[in-house]
Image (cartoon, rainbow, N blue to C red):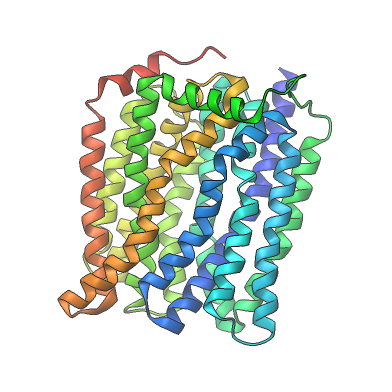
Length: 414
């Protein structure tokens, strides 16, 4: 029991480091997105920034997952977090010489994404190392809350920082957060045993075995494929929510709207962090997704800021229930020794939806805006509403799939 408590304390330290990192990354993402939109007025250019910040990490996720099962996961987290700051530093240096060109911002974002690929599989697998099966649900509520920090705290902080300074201050703050997260990972690493194979198997054989774990259980694989669709619709909202609001409001207002909306995830994240979900994970998954879809669709119906905040709050408040349930269903159906590489494949497949969203949503919004003659703001609104309706439909279909419901009964014994 003592070990369990000590490990949960280490998890909280690691989580705190990732919370700080998420806030710092959110500051940079918000600031650079606004910088590009003010220079070009194009949702497609903003979407390209998001794509380049995401795609390299996704492509490298699977080999990074294999490394997470072969080497010290905490050390990989330190390397990934530390070196990803180089991309932000490159952008800052370009900014110090004057206005940075779009290609310089895109290059720096890509470099940062390449190194951050080491982080996620190692972080996810480390949670399994530290915690018991009974602690997963409670811990995932906190993890969801940390992930929401880039939407909850970062926008309003960035909005006020930009009101008194410029993008360079935001970049400096983000670079400082990298040092704090590396220190947190180093402290957790101290005294924690690292379980690596005595004779590491060939790299591609490890990768193949990770794929077998994911694809061998049909219900799990189906859940992952459906989650890719979910990521597609959510990615559209993630990209186009900002140009929609910026079409009738300023940066400070955008920051307040995003923070008010994302506070929904804070509320339910804290609730789940305290209590967790005890049963009916599949039901919590599809209901959470359906409610999020309704919130997404209604978010873009009007330009009334209060209504936008309310439905944005609903969207984010429902997400932790879905994320928590999906994480539990996947994590408890994967043997511990395959956690790193299996989660890499899970992340790769499910997040392909984000790639499609980031590649097409901005172009679609610009095109719809031209067709309607009402500009990129209206084009973004229409695209977001359509995606919200699609998310509700997918959630309802998921509720009737027997193989997914069976995952709750077939968890790997911890």
